Image (cartoon, rainbow, N blue to C red):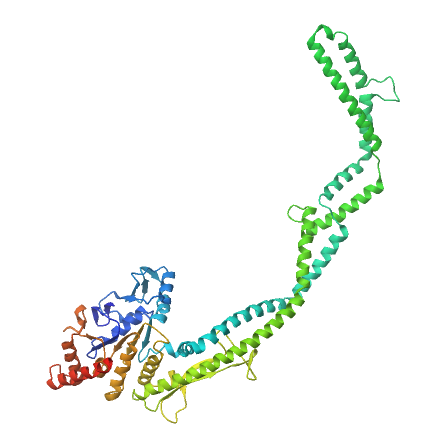
Length: 577
């Protein structure tokens, strides 16, 4: 992690490593800036007061090596970040004016994304930063992972039944709450279907009726026109002397036939007149037949108009964009299917109600099994954490789990109570602490002082290590208010936690720093700043000198050096047993 222009730090690189890293230094040297820098990388609040005097901005850059399958890696990639051989590059810039920018994997992102990633990457514990395991949801999740397979199986079955119950209940609620709407829809459909069924429309019928109505409405005019046309073509029996087309055509044909043998062209014209004669005779015959068949029938015309009015009403109500009877018939078919579906809803409601009752009963049995597994795991957890606290200068502290249920008349019944339920079961889970005999157990956020809270968190993290596998833990002043043997036990437990995770500890106690796999020291220059060379990894000889300073205040004290060497030897011995 590189830090520039943050607090007293001018430009420094903090080299962290797997295992246990201790960060030490004199008061005011800038150790807290290490914690602050990591907090900024994890989406912490950007305080412009953190920017070093005379600088425009503070910048923190970090390279995080993510474990395979990390949810944080998936979330970062989803946001457009690119991984560098499994590593994620994060940077945070805070300007002196208060503006803040964040980049993840080369992509500019909202600062809120850093906080999301931090939830799965780093657990920060300090005097004012005890957040992660203080939330009941996190406590329940951690307890469930701690419980292992004894809870995982029942919880998985519970969640599957819960999912099925939600689906059934959602469908049932939709059907029952929309009962009035469905009844109204069914009534409208029945009325429309009855109307269509009574009319019995046939596709294209309206077009035929329109043509018939047009013909019947003008029957007299049509008959008169046909009769006059026939007379003009074939002659009028009432006036035998009147000339007609047939008579004139016959005269033309006779005139040409008399001389056609003298000229082929004239013969061809004569043949064409013969064809005209045949066609004229056909048309005259058809006109005579049309006039004879045409009959003005007012009764039939009235019936046609009535039928057209009925069909017009159907088209107006049920016709589609094309306004055709085919669309009316199609509407009736789909309406009939929908009505069958609506009429079957009552049976479906009864069926879904029975299924819901059965699923609620099954869910209640599984919820009770999940609760029992949690209770058993909580007892083991409480005993383990209380034992850890006894070695951390809190011999009388007791940690317990409060596992309770909330009454809810719309919930599921367990042991005669109707309680609320959710995707994780019916349990409300919270870790309680009684710091001394006679004290009432209270939520750990309220039941411990600042110094006690860090030790409680340490004990909890040690017990949860492996069950709640966050890759990195940061403890700031976890050893506040303790010393002597308790400080040694704190160091030993941090070393134990470092066997399964990366642990970074800012400390002023040599008993804690002695257990570290890597020791960093923060040193200021003469002008009061921390430069690149001011945060360095100590060699074994330099560790002895730093521990001597922390023990006796004198780096070169022979007694202090001897004590430091003894402390290092004692710290290393248990690690190899």
